[in-house]
Length: 289
Image (cartoon, rainbow, N blue to C red; front, side):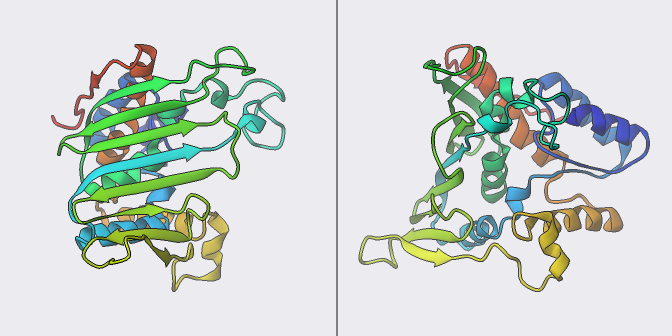
């Protein structure tokens, strides 16, 4: 319902901070681009992971050139969501209890903005093509549900991004994983302490051929106590503050329409590729005109 709510809000003259994914079809994306451009209003994608301190630390180190030019990125979102595949009366999904929610039949790869958003932000790049495969081993899963989808994306700068997404898999704890390979070194998050530990290897600085652990606090410094109320450390507070500040200043936010489309559209085409047996599909640049 993100697209529908966004259009109604903008037609009423409101700025919009929209959850992700921004849209669920190419047709919605095309209309959204035209609507936002014509409105003159502020539109921002609520991709909170871009505001995680550990992602911001990776961004800073890439900008400083610590690992050189990034040539490959690998991301994973592994989260067993079977307990919320059906609507519940506690607010998670809404509606009648025991009715399949949107999660039950949503292609997992379409929910890859948590990885693609940070990667595209850090690399200042866009995705131009994708090939995606899905697991065909359904086992005891309900008919019509998908277990695992894995995509390989090509960027405009010639980089490769690999993304693995699954919401029906036996693995705990759930995790986001981010890995960047550069010409001078590599950097990745800890699979078991993904928000608090960064691993870094720089060839010219590490004579032991091992990655160095870098502790990172999930709490941004210098914020009021209420900044913790939003969740994910203080990332929600920083994200919403960016939206409010963009409105006050009349300037485009970090995660503007361009970023929203570029982190969302590849997942839509990846799902299409999976349905076509992994066929490589070119992704158009809807923002070019």
